[in-house]
Length: 79
Length: 139
Image 1 (cartoon, one colour):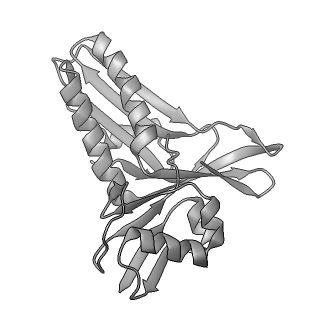
Image 2 (image 1 turned 90 degrees about the horizontal axis):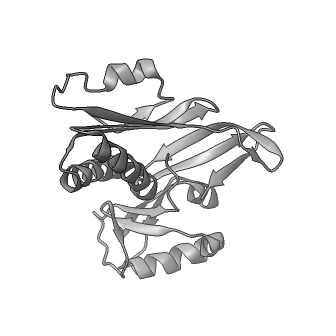
């Protein structure tokens, strides 16, 4: 499936982009996605981040589809 | 009104965007300004902060925070939140929160909670630009 992943803060430096397009039939859920991304970008393993799907932060493995809006969110630092 | 505003938040800009309709039942207004500090990092001065944000999520979450404050504090009459996006220099303001209440006590209490919720829940990131041209992400 084809996914678009938004990257924010320092993660855009790690992946050298603020948006990734992935076309991979083996990725069906957020756990698959994390394994894929951390293999491709090993520095991500050392980063603290959360995942949001459709603008909601998820805490458990979540199924994805091509319409899912996926984002990797490092710790917030507003103010 | 949207929470995210491009660039620094000075009084002139705020006066244009805030709700200026007088509320004759409000007995107190608490205002919090967040300002960029010229901290020393890696032996260099912070000259500016570049704010980036997950725009749509900021707007949703900001509205939720406003609603939560209004529900929790029955004397609070309005909550306004504005946050900079883009570059803000040291000494300039990046956050403006205004809470109007019938009386002072809830205005004081709720603005502290509101600012804490903003820092905790709004998906905003800052890149501190240092005087030697390097930068640091705040995490």
